[in-house]
Length: 183
Image: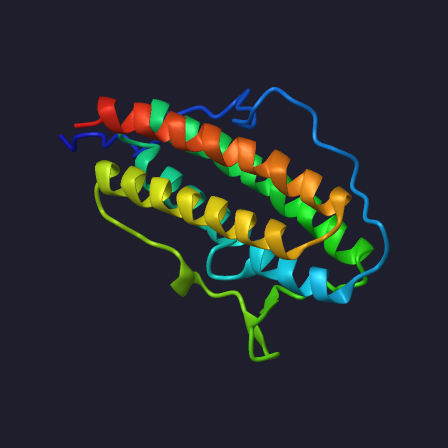
């Protein structure tokens, strides 16, 4: 008699997942005037090596690999990825408002554009390493946003970057808590 095989199935349900973010509104997407130089600078936050595109991809990759074995952790990572998606969307609106274009290519210091690549993300094998890499990525993003805020003399642009930093700091706090819980 042939034994009936059960299909493999991921039991982790992502129903009801919400973005993991600070409970404060985002400022209006506004700028004092068009400024392609600011748009180019923000293109790095949008899709450079340290960017919202990189963060989203890294979180989704980690969530995919953890969902079948560590569902609660995977759910939190998906929630953080959703917040990063909102950052990406808001930066994109601001780049266009500033007179830039969305092309998934970041403006480099040498004036050339470089297309986003998955080479920018870290793909460790174990949950603790994933969380550590995510924490480091969040710290790099904060440093880059702060550096860009010093270079940008536009209160509307800097208001958005300041609000995004609050979410990134919150993500670091949550990721440290998760790191303490993961074996």
